[in-house]
Image (tube, rainbow, N blue to C red; front, top):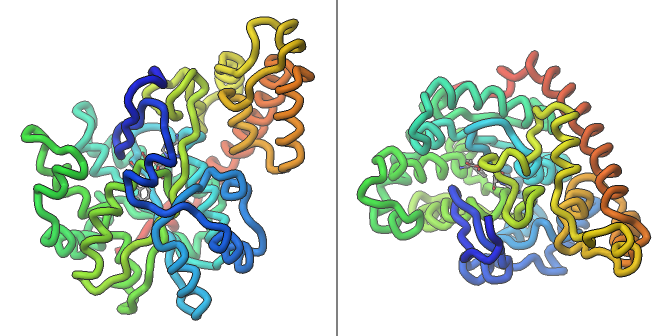
Length: 374
Ligand code: TYM
């Protein structure tokens, strides 16, 4: 994929060089202000590194959620996954941040598995395959450490009873012309996909429906999911609910040159189920901001700004701000060369995968208990 391509950000396709400032304007979201971060820090105790380092970068109504919280009104978290294959490291980032919010605010999480969406989207998918990935991917969700008592995973196909009652009410307020404009649906789009935005909207209101109280929802996710929320936010007041709030992240890049981490390019994508050897190989083949030779690197220094290895340290594998700064400076000045950096990252990736895979194994014993009982 070339980074010179025109920027495209939809729930199903992300390509080109992503200009996040432009996305804020295009999608009509708000940047995260200093005041909001201070308020978050006041309640959460500390600012998560993913927000300190600007990975989460814009929002809608996050300020409102914090204000309501200050007035004693709790919210619920809502996020999800389209289970079309194994989970990659990019998917984990919004979940890691969601876990921080769950712990900081002691709130419930609804986690939607859109096995219907993936079945409808992919010609070669069976329902069974989609649901199979729901259970497989749920192991990754549990491995992140979400508390069982406060987390409900929803499979659209298995739990449709809980969702349908809400989805039809949403659907009645959304015209075809709206979803066609927002999602780019065409004459040939199957009618399941045309209805689907109502299904992804439903968990925003699930807590309100189950408790009979109006409870706002906050959605941490990457910005590709935004079209769903634009439609849902228009409908919410018509149904008497709070508009769902969002906190949006950027995309973790793939290990190649340009483009987000995407399962469609497995050689540049680290899956949580990769063997340690396979993951290490991917890291050693990664695109860096280095010079063609070690000698030139020592002389002229590298460019961490475009380096995928640096990005992985920044967003996933180095929580210490001081050490990240040091790595940046060492790269710029040529004190470290790409091979050394890749070795450090490879060790961290392998350690992470080893631990994550152990937690995934353990999750098999409890996975059923996390699912919504409807
Ligand atoms: P899906 O499976 O495409 O993505 C799951 C989550 O991962 C985010 N994401 C990324 N984040 C950082 N870097 C990347 N390279 C990257 N690629 C994907 C997505 O934004 C998402 O948060 N339709 C949805 C499932 C869904 C959902 C939700 C997601 C249902 N309800 C509520 C978020 C919030 C989907 O297919 O996600």
